[in-house]
Image (cartoon, rainbow, N blue to C red; front, side, top):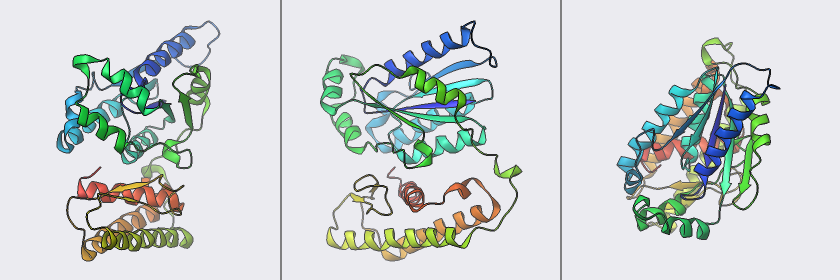
Length: 298
């Protein structure tokens, strides 16, 4: 029915927001004025998904932890449930996966960004005691945070909430209850040929990213990140590609580029899930997520 994804820095107040949403939604559903279908509110978080804070200490355990969270969230999705995913959700590629899962479940999506300043998060983190992250892990999570953007469909509609402002609970309720539902799955979509301009956008965007990345690697061989230029990124510094701890070669990058283009060309032609990627900003974000998955740097 709906998926509400909470996004924010560690110790930014995401769980307080999630708990306030659960209470507000349940009160709305129990109100005599409510005349809609019978719905259940499900709160999915790291704790009930068996994801400890220590999983974020290294990339291997973190990837496994994200898998647990993704499984718990997708299993909870259904026509009679409002699912609130309360976790870091700081990687754009992971949010895209969640968006796709919600689409397959014919669910509405809402992204809620709890925008707490890093210094305030650090202050709250230091008061947690034994339940805190390791200092290096906490700093790393702050650095790697990828802020949601209303310009890409998997983060939209986006509600940004400042830490010191009242929660816009009614706004989020309305979006979850009356927003646009996602389209049908590939199984029931009519097959159609991808538009030429769509394929041109795909190849032009991947070519631009590939050439600019190679120039960046040649200029700064030891770099661990690459800011995607704007365009195709929605805005400067809004899309960051995390590089592997080795030099990426031209043949490898060309091979990955061809693989990505082939996969999405076929999906667009068949009306599959990836066929919804149309604009250059969305192609760029999907290509970055594809590369990070291939390199295990997400």
